[in-house]
Length: 173
Image (cartoon, rainbow, N blue to C red; front, side, top):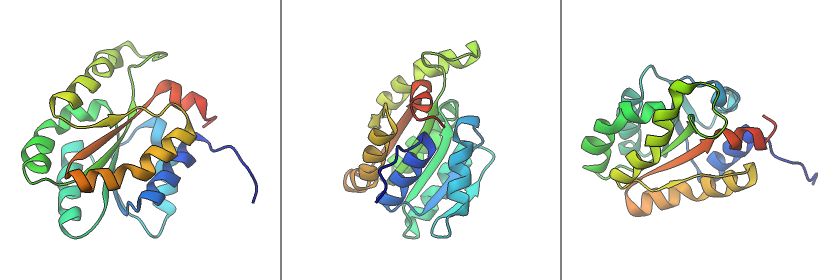
């Protein structure tokens, strides 16, 4: 077997596959575009692009109740849009799901308007008691995401995976 270095998107995709995640919604994000393509091409994953994050959270709740392993791919700015759906639906009814977020507004962010939400994102997750992880390399991301569903289902919680700007630069994506 060839020993190759994973790029950022491929590592996240392989983590998703290893976790058995089979139902994904997404909201547009430039950093996640290559990942969207990988997921869209996978016949074992049901994939729906959505227009708003809270819409996606509602769809994922239904997918979980139908026996699927759900995940949303979004930019962290969408977390703000999702707070009510996460608290009043997923947390209230203990619906596990994975949120893989391109964490904009972190070190190296070229758009100043992204910085306030970038700083607030961990605090929002903490205030909702949602565990989150910040993988620094593609290998680390693959390992964390691979184990994420098991943790979410066991604890009946949502899990945040924050992929900072430095993550995308570490994997030649």
